[in-house]
Length: 472
Image (cartoon, rainbow, N blue to C red; front, side, top):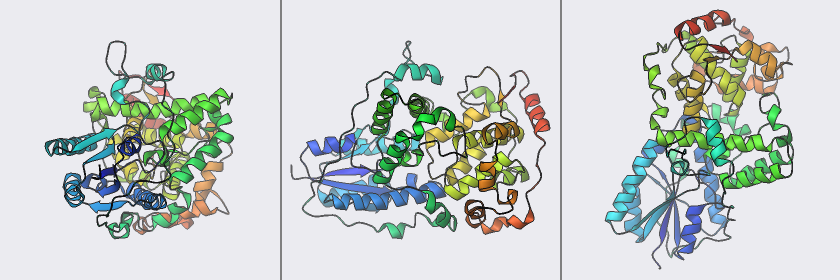
């Protein structure tokens, strides 16, 4: 019982509501927390990798306060863990499950190696409310449409979150650790890091405060306010959930308590948490959603590739205010309002007829709250190649959408400096965040539209002949 256990942390940077930690503590063994910068983590986009590094550094401080340490190592996970087991005589390794194909393959290889070595290798839940294979249709298959999925899970029991332990049992000696500063996880962010840093909320304490503030007030108007990008009407917990700085069970139970108190928007908030679950449900059962058309009949669709229009979209210079404001919000804050995500995705894939994969990859590079399942499902839903249950092909008109959801122009002026005589700090911050090579200058004025909306819609509908069309 003196042999330690290695706790392999990944996207679970917290000490409360963590089944892996509960199970490890129950063994009575000393615990060695470890974070590995492996090739799968090295492959993250610039913003996500930078934000993860900040989360890891903060979590190391939290562990130190609990009488423990976070050991940092770099390299392929199996090789790093093998070295640590040899150095420490560890009895085994525990970790919280991840569900993307690369993580599943990596974890399966580690588990097989540990089994062959006669050591413990255990994976635990913790990133989701419901393990994807536990939610089945009446016929025993998986759900392809969200509404019946929601009906299947909304009444399920969810285990109560477990509080964080005051102390973690430490080993007699600690293995050597890298310094996170030497990893330079934020190098690819360059000058954008200084701008985005003012908008992130790192760590379990900040995540809990963010949740409590939302459920104490804004959740009451969530039904309507979640669609208004100029209002602070959402929880903004996506940033913390993706790195596991707050447990999804804790959020669910807090949201359910608000619902039972009669908070008007709480049920819709719970439904959005289930939407996140649905994304993982689909990624587990149909992993091709990450890089191929979820609906195979779209494989022959004539998507466009790279070009000047795509670059204008990337730079927030399309001349379409809703699209450009949303893209600029991403560069300034590291995230994007959900209504904006739908609009920019629809615009790229419909009005510009560009392959959704280009947008998916760009979001993966730029979002601090990037999540593999949610990003993929969102892009394919918007493009029409994914799990959209609508009986027609949806095309959002960004001009009518902006009048509906930003009627006073507050969101547009907040992020587009060229639309205001006295632009605010966030609008100007866009020019300080983006690459110098883009050569953007607010003094040049706002560009004209790169595509006429009516013409773009007509072109899209012509390509979708036989599939129908619709206006959002």
